Image 1: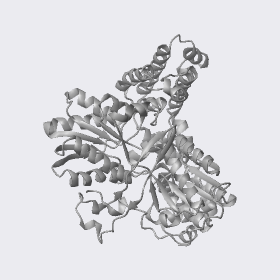
Image 2 (image 1 turned 30 degrees about the vertical axis):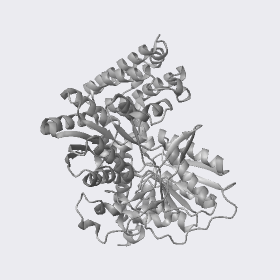
Image 3 (image 1 turned 135 degrees about the vertical axis):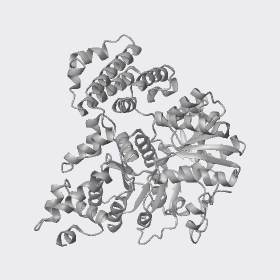
Image 4 (image 1 turned 120 degrees about the vertical axis):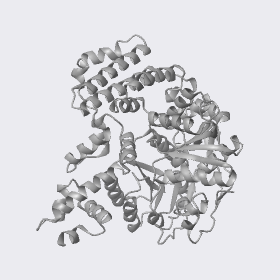
Length: 581
């Protein structure tokens, strides 16, 4: 078999609304002496990426308190208010209630410095255990060191860590990206009868998702379907139009040799794939993708996709809390605990849609992205598609999901969110959105005085077109959104800025803006901000008599200790030592 890891049978099913699964035991293969000597299509080449953390030597781990989990205090740090984390917290709470654990949840809102402050607070409060989801891998090890030094046990969850972080934690829990994509590759090969050429839409090169979603698939296919050929791999920045053009190029270049497409994302890129296939009349190309959003499930239902990988946010939270409960009970916990590797195909997708599974992207976020990138041709498609999705019950009120119904409050809330996004986007480009749209009274009447939901959508459509026309006329879109973000940050780096506050100014969600920034620059926003600030700090420390604590405040760090840790992380020496040099 292509995979070097052996899994027991996974089960995931629902009994009276309760999610159950049996992750079994994982048999870890021996590490090759030199993985780099193997060719890229040999899974042993990627051993250290696939099994990072499994062989970490744990030292000085806290011992569990006597008496089991009931009454224990567990604090969880999540990175944002994204819908994924809302459902993740639902799983945390359900499992905590079952175990009698007292749970508190803190949200760092995509702000690395806020996360550091939360860590300091929890060290003072000394919970019995911390479940830690870092904002990102960058600087997560430093936070874990602080918990470790204080003897506070930590279970890390969902976000992968640097190799040196794993000895500091009891366990890591979350999705098995490599396992899921090996499973997807086997399904893909079976459907194509193990022959033919395929192309891949990848994640950002150099990231851990890129390795799992490209080389997890390619090494598995090289083993189970050696006659299959990888024709091309492209990163299209998760953009619908770039993906459409890439697929048109593949079809024209490879013709009938192209039998399948694998995508690292099942939402926006797959919309581009669907359009390209329709333009060329290619109904014979089989597509699968990493998931799982509601849009991806809808693509499975209509046949655009044959399968998507699936991980449940609720089960993700439950797994972390269940691992905490096991540790409190004195049960040995593995260094890594994975969610079940699962696929959703046409046979199961209806039940997933009916039960309202999958993450629904905010229409406001997508609308603002289209406007910010100046894509006039996308607007009509966006509103026509949104209207169809509402009419078909594909967008439904969570409370009424089983009836495919959108309540008045839910619908108006969605429209108000979109209008708010338009106003914030106008403000980003130094426009008075309220005046542009005729004043508050006109805005209010325009939204609530429509007689029919379709009229409301058409009103929002016209308002969006007016805004885009103004932006284009004023050449406000000459620079990309990321360039605007960089310019703003360079001007305000010394202020207490964070991705969330900037995202509000730009009229977008912090999750989307952070994702866009990383896709375009290769760096996370917090890493960019820290590098910018430390670069400025180095120049200030070169001035004779400069004091590091004063420099920290001058470049935007409210906490001197946090400045010291970031400075050492990025430069390799302490701020005091650098100043003395």
